[in-house]
Image 1: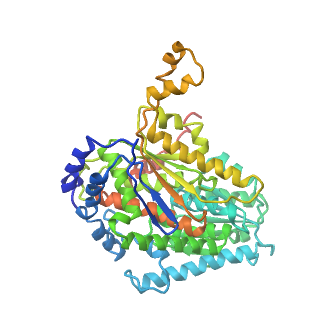
Image 2: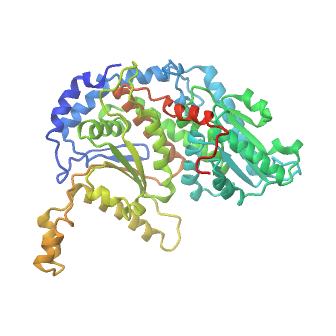
Image 3: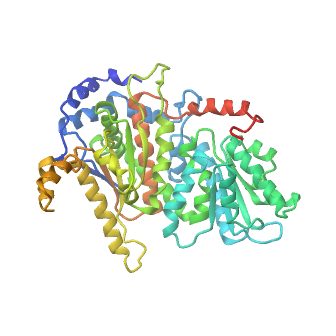
Length: 519
């Protein structure tokens, strides 16, 4: 795959960026797929720039690379693996390019872990005293935590029947204490999730939970009745004492940050119900179909990726905020941090040569209304320009008396902040506004520079048109997966490994048993 600077459109875009349009007169541009509408009108790009950006898709061979991935070719070069997370959500009745063996294995495991989730919800899985379990704790870190935790937070509030679940990713004793004080030791099932089944944090928590249960009176012989394993290494789980009937599998061609569609999604099915999880799969499959078949000018993932590249590489914006105006999506920015920065936070190309361009920006963000009273000051008047993804949900709310009024406040705030970032306010407009406040000329002169907004700060607006459901959440997650894939293809970097964390891990192993730092 070519170095991005060698693509014919790259130098043209570089030249066009020197006269990028402002945002006081936006260029209308929005597209829709399924239950998602993406408004891109507040990007600093006109039609000529969009035309050149679109050419990057063909010049970089994005479609060819996608077909290689779908066919199960080795696209994770450094680990010599295929990458087939899209297979995890494909419809059961369709012929798939990855073959019948993979499709059948996926369906078999899906039926196993969804059936187990339903059995727990029904109370037919018992502890050593013959009692049904009433709580669950998910033990995992990274992709074994962020995806399931985010989806449970997103879908839980509107689910009709919830199985209580806690998430524990860190062996920090205060994190452990916070979870254990809320669960019954005799009636809690622990889901231990680790692809390798050797993840340091996860294995430490597994040992901690065993010790705690023993201290709470669970007999040694009955201990493992309360543990479930999800892993790509079932032999290691078996060696640790896990029952094969309570060990659920996924495969080495599933990356951690795209594993929520596999048995890693067991907590979602348990907490919200198997149907909610299956709706997520259906939504993701719909977005997969759109990504593969939509023309370039109407492809959501392509444009989300292309404007990200425009802002990062041509306008020089090195961070990107994701701001959600729906409390249920409060964990989505944290989920995207792993998806985007672990995938594309690379400085080496696929051919082993250093990248000549900037790759993944820093991803950060949070809830919109909270952010307006914290970091939005920087967004509006800071020295760095930070593009924003505003994510909204068309919802009537849960139905209490003031629900619609509260929802109106949330949606109007989103639109107002987006408009303010784009348009800003000139010094003349600021003076005019202050004149209405009857300020003295001296006071207006003093305040004018402080109350003037530069504007021209780009953003996207992504709207879920039919409330937040498993179907729309699946589409939303898959959209960002495809955005990351597209950007990696254009940047020519390996998106599917994560060697950056390994050095710290190896140093930590050497420090084992050394004196506690600061203790």
